[in-house]
Length: 180
Image (tube, rainbow, N blue to C red):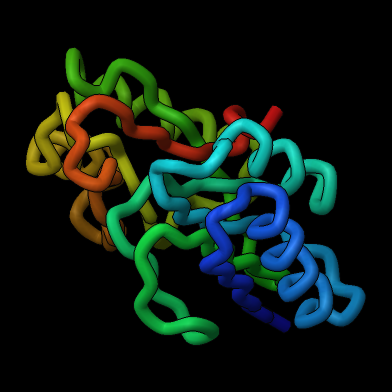
């Protein structure tokens, strides 16, 4: 079984937005425990607080994502300045997250670090890679090249760069280790 659920709020208040999103996801999960999630949040939210609330609601979740300049979901369609969380629950698919640091200085080393962390507790080789690296100081092409070098050509790489609403001064990437 594999189930994905989505929570999406366009309330500008961090507490109200994350409360709405967690409630939507919990209701849709109908008692199932998610193992992983993807979080996209506008730049003006209190990201640390939101991550703490997700960790409290869903302990041990493998979480990735980042700041965005527009969010889209099946719940509210396209919004700006919103918060969206997609959760995955499965008893047949293993989902792991990893964080690569200092990507602007060495994308290949950051890719190695993220993949090592993600596969460290995995029982199977990677089949798909989702990535949402920061975009102010790094090259998306170099990051993908680094990931391909480590994963090989047979693992699809999907994702996008984080954004900060054209302020060019703050980006946040979310990962499991950010939530701890």
